[in-house]
Image (cartoon, rainbow, N blue to C red):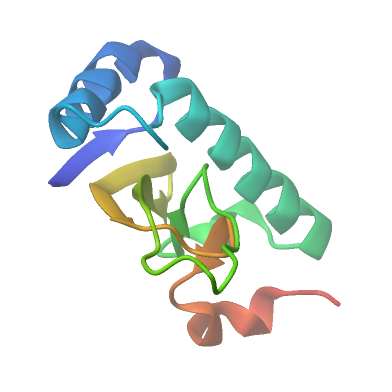
Length: 122
């Protein structure tokens, strides 16, 4: 589900309604607005640790899956989990998409890392 919601505490109810709509009747590996807030804090902390200035975060996109984990090869299929796409803007973070997808091995993945690598201070 494509959406464009600013990730703030004031929009918690709107975000949760969008999540509930995507999850439907799913009961396993679900997410909540608070999982999204925690993921945004993690992304922000990682960018701070890398020395990326706030003004340079505009346009960065991340795929976030709170229930990410690596599954043994004995599993025939990878289970689905609720995942988010977030994008950095000049005023903060925007939720751009919510979907149910195969569970990735990493919790946070950057989509356009090559475009922003120059801002990382290693």
